Image (cartoon, rainbow, N blue to C red; front, side, top):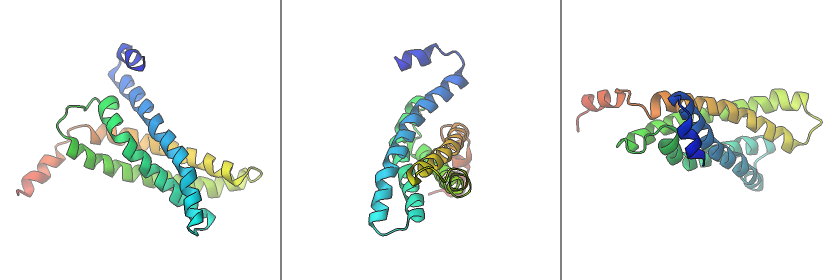
Amino acid sequence: MLLKILEKIKSKELRSFISFFLTAILGAGTNFITQIPYKSLFLYLGFADKPAFNLSVSAGYLTATVVSFIPAKVFAFSAKESGNTRRESVKFLIIALVAWGIQVGISSLTFDHVANKYFSQYSLFVREKGSHVVGMGFSFLANYFGHKFLTFRSTGIYDKIKTRNPR
């Protein structure tokens, strides 16, 4: 049903964005849900609350990155048969690392300077999850534009590097 709706959307840009958004929901759900047991694991391993939060956000993000590569390639950017999966996976990983840094950094800053300052009456869990969602939003934007303009597009950079280093 979703594929039929997407086929009816005339604008290729809008269709690509909506497809990426739907793919991102899978990644975001994975990220959001897995962060909770990861935090419990890091607390169990003896980490203090703040490091456990940052590490669990990182682990959730990395789990979501693995889960979302194929759907992003196939559905969001129509690169199913590009023949460049290895090259795309390297670029995907680079963009993912940048977006990971953005997510962890924004989540941590939001937690420290917004959630704890203005929402201290809420539980630690609510403040952490709210901060996590803010970080995920910024990460979504970094991922979308990075993958759109670099990962699933032929930029010529790989070919230039390859010609410099013949093997």
